[in-house]
Amino acid sequence: DHMTHIFHRNPRQSLPVAVGGEGIELIDQSGKRYIDACGGAAVSCLGHGHPRVVNAIKAQVDTLAYAHTSFFTTAAAEELASMLAASAPGSLNHVYFVSGGSEAVEAGLKLARQYYVEIGQAQRRFFIARRQSYHGNTLAALSIGGNAWRREAFLPLLIPAHHVAPCYAYRDQLAGESDAQYVQRLADELEQKILEIGSDKVATFVAETVVGATAGAVPPLADYFRKIRAVCDKYGVLLMLDEVMSGMGRTGYLFACEEDRVEPDIVIIAKGLGAGYQPIGAMICSDKIFNAVVEGSGFFQHGHTYIGHATACAAALAVQTVIQEENLLANVRQRGEQLQQRLREVFAEHPHVGDIRGRGLFVGVELVADRASKQPLAPAQRTHAKVKAEAMARGLLVYPMGGTIDGRQGDHVLLAPPFICNAIDIDEIVHRLAPAI
Ligand code: PMP
Image 1 (cartoon, rainbow, N blue to C red):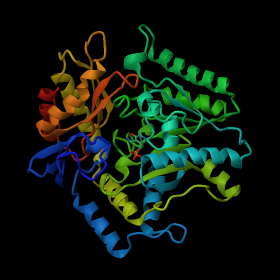
Image 2 (cartoon, protein in one colour; image 1 turned 135 degrees about the horizontal axis):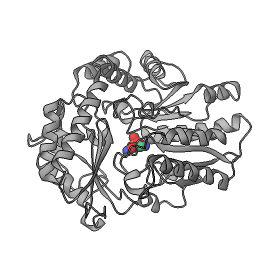
Image 3 (cartoon, rainbow, N blue to C red; image 1 turned 90 degrees about the vertical axis):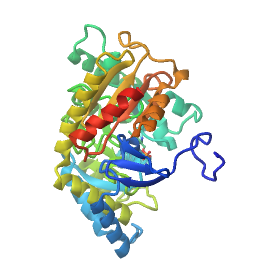
């Protein structure tokens, strides 16, 4: 029955049909209910069928579904942009709406290049990103991404990118090395890389604030991004943070980088912005970059048909209003602590659970062959996929990921439950996950 007319990514797999969603649950055609503990891939942060969001979408469609941005702006887009500009760190005040994460990354990469053209430094066209990172599947986003197996089939890629190590203390911090020494070593590596490429040739350093699907919710150590920011500033390199997964409240802060006390030049958001009710993403840039374009050519050389889509913006505006008015970020922080604590209790002695880490309701459980040595499981066993299937059989959705150490080895499951979860929901998630693992 895999011969459907939809080109599924994995055509040999047959999928249940989703027929409904209510709160934190999804329902399939047999009537079976699943707790959506990953929101797809950290998307559905308000759960399913939220009446305020559904009503906002209906009202927008009733009035005006879409108007092309070369002719009109809309109240929904303007209000959403104002809200994001007011909440974003520092001078990040200019919001460019697109339809998803990869598109937002593309917009950020192109704006970074154009910024340097505007200020007469067109030779700055190299990007530095990090190994084991994911920034999207379009060709430029893939070019900067650091995940080996995703890139392999498409080499040579589009834009020149170089990679340095991510901040992944559990695996990479040396024995006896202090946090401060480790962070300094990473900052030094970035500085070396900039000098190697040529300090006047580097456009932007790109990083996920908290590494999502390719490493499993790995937060940076304190001060990592402040040290990285200082290196960027020393050489006039822009800092672009990808918060497609970690942003919009997932970590307990609207922008994950607030916790790192760092202000990027460009921040990328998607997923939780529209919470899955509509496809939407955004690139937010600083006054400095925006002004360079306005005072220079006066035109951003980039665009898509659906930028600032009125219905998508209305949905996102409703989502973000609910999060603010219901003070859901406080709940994300509390429930996130509970989730990590419960996981630590349940898996304290488990031989195959190596690490539990994350921020807020963005938590990764790393599965290993041996807890003490941190040795990964054999990739051919596809343990992450088996855990996903076992969890699904028990009515629980968790996001599986393989290749989380070097693109080939490494298994983890990602938990990203909705912000509306209560304490009982969190206990139930762990209760179902334990036997699955
Ligand atoms: N950046 C990050 C950090 C992501 O996690 C993703 C999606 N998993 C993307 C970019 C790409 O977003 P999209 O799938 O919406 O294009």
